[in-house]
Amino acid sequence: MDLLIFDLDGTLIDSRLDLAQSVNATRKHMGMPPLDSERVASYVGNGAPVLIRRALGEQATEAQLQEALEFFLEHYREHALDLTTVYPGVRESLARLHAAGKRLAVLTNKPVKISRDIVNGLGMGGYFFQVYGGNSFEFKKPNPVGVKALMTEAGAPPDAVMMVGDSSVDILTARNAGIRSCGVTYGLQPETLADPAPDLLVGRMEELADWILNTGDKR
Image (cartoon, rainbow, N blue to C red):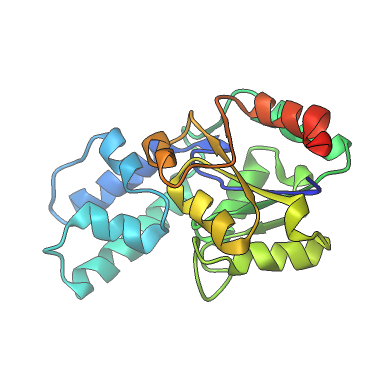
């Protein structure tokens, strides 16, 4: 594997508390009661517009959704790093992979500016040659356009690329792009990894780094 493409929320960072607080601030702004953080976490993965649509419910009008989305994005920009942390073992694993000459990138459905601010704010920016978000391309994951752009930039063929994520969105993205996938079980939506199943399943990021550096090139 020469190119590793990582999801952000639930894969590299534990952002559930900041996302829940911003969603609930938005619901309060819209005159609605709060949701528990696990419920909010189950809504994450398809981008901010879908997150807010799920958080407000089917009865919300387009005007309400737009108002809520604008409020959410403004609130989240200011509070995205209040409680968000890097998952255990992630930083060390990225350092090992980067030192070994692997090309690393982030492809998330979260807006790109917020994503880059988070990656840089948590001190991980130096590991990635590119960070793309949900508004970097015409289509979000699971559309493969982001993966294909990263493959072109890295000069990596499909059989040397792996997508790493915590949900079925990431596994479908990999399948649609014709690359391998790795699911992490510690993230926001591990229950979605049963179908479709990833090529590799790990409980800690160190396991992926070990596989890539010790056995991946032999398979």
